[in-house]
Image 1 (cartoon, one colour):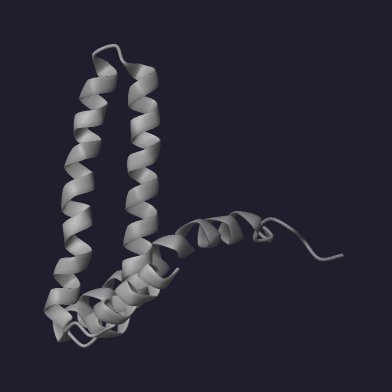
Image 2 (cartoon, rainbow, N blue to C red):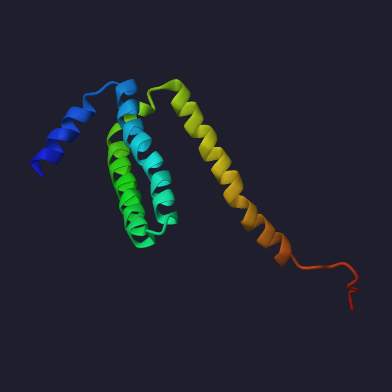
Length: 117
């Protein structure tokens, strides 16, 4: 636990661009590794490939999430990053609202052809 706290304090002292680099390095290592694992699994080693893929996803998810939680305030100090993040959130909200709108449109009562009594 002391090592994790020590690393956290050191990471929190970084400036914005080194913080961005710190997040990008694990992603730059793990993502090509996942492609290599797919080729490895495709060559007949599907059990080993599956285990390796699960481990690669776990490391990618947990390490990147831990780092992002620490450096997020620093990343938002970068104007271009903050603007890109706001744009991505807006796109996500728009796209995620599509199924809800389609469902509500389908469920709307049809009044055409009805006569009042």
